Length: 316
Image (cartoon, rainbow, N blue to C red; front, top):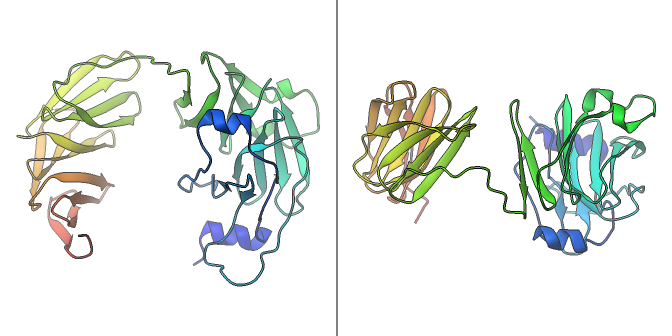
């Protein structure tokens, strides 16, 4: 079965050296020369900003022969951000605009104006798009009105967010929050309470979980910064923690993994099997996968704590 990436590239051919503009001042301000993030439903950042200043999208499995290429011309300055799906490509530029391109024809079918300086980052889903700019602002756009007859761009703008004192370098959002970062070093809140280094944190909804070298896990309210409860049980410092709203799973230098009930803060199960610090873990509704300084990766059943797999060879 072909991945969405292969399907998309198969339909649209291979986009190579798109937007051939040199990356200059703003990219230096952002502190990047090359950027590659994890795939999403919308295939964000399969592109890379190369040293030469070209944006490329290519299939790593294709090594022989020449790639067909399509140039999308329309921006009057460097392109700083890009995201695409099976129908369109969305780009943000130093020319202060966001453009929408038909992925089959390569034609620009809509241009959004609103930012006063370079558009440095953007992300969209079916309902909204969020963009950040050197003008220190964030704009939320109505994606359901994109592609409608041309008119006033303010019709498409839902919100104009201010608060940063420097350019907005990157953004991400979910159903509840927009998270933005900037070189302004803006700190909204400092949570204090741990007596050792905080080695891991995770956000879920309006709560934050933190794990520390003091052997404690703490739960906090995101909006108020209020400390809610401690999870006590590990005998040595913690290195990793995961939180899904119902369960907390933690890994420690005591060589164990513990599963906790979020509401009661009680440990419901302790998983033993690693012979050194449990450095990383991830879990879903069925399984836990853990990695340790003992050079093994283990798979556990979440419901029972039973060890299902033990990968002992490969890491040295």
